[in-house]
Length: 294
Image (cartoon, rainbow, N blue to C red; front, top):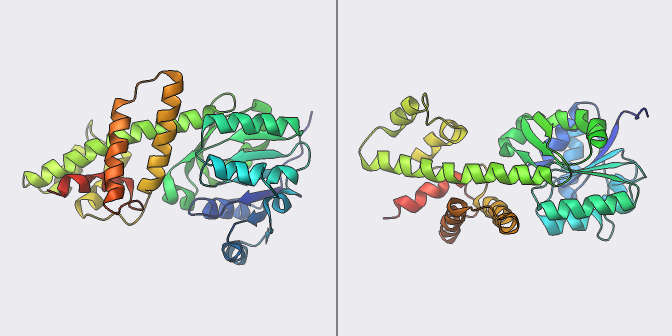
């Protein structure tokens, strides 16, 4: 069956990720209708990018062929889909809902079932790359759902992605994002200890990072956060509050599937200490500040 190319999209949630992601869709020529809980932010987006805004998620979705939502957590994604004036109430049969929110695999599966019962399609598509990746349109998107549905909307997702892959059935996108966060958590702690050790040893930390980043210790975190960790700058990037939410999802899923996450659980507690230092909105690389307190 030939599928009509997606031209009209809705985007729900214009936070630090959603705002630029929706902008990339508009820049690629899609007709975009946006919704945000704060209307002023939606008005600002329309002024910058064109398109239109709507008063509710249902209204935003009513004329769309694909609907994106980038919100905070499981409760938020339920609210903007099946809650009062949620998008599912306004979507036409056959419309695809894509959820880039980092949420649980459980809520993805539940919303997939609910969507299918209404004649709609659903994909979970969490992203990695942070605010900078969203602004530059180079996010990594990990998708769970049906191949035919993915094929219909993959070109739209590519508007803000450097890499986009279907990882298997619904929920697998969220599970893949959990793997991503588990890998990052231990890495950032290791880098924090390395930076603090270099400082305590009286080394030129930037020089150390420059040389070791050419070898086996190299990582995205070292390349992009090592210098700012040395400078004690953390007022940017992926917030500690968000990382704790994500690690909470990982630990809950691990309890269900039997995976052991001892380092992730420990780093989660380290992040709780950073929060108690007033660092909930600091970048995740602020773990190094725990080690500098003494």
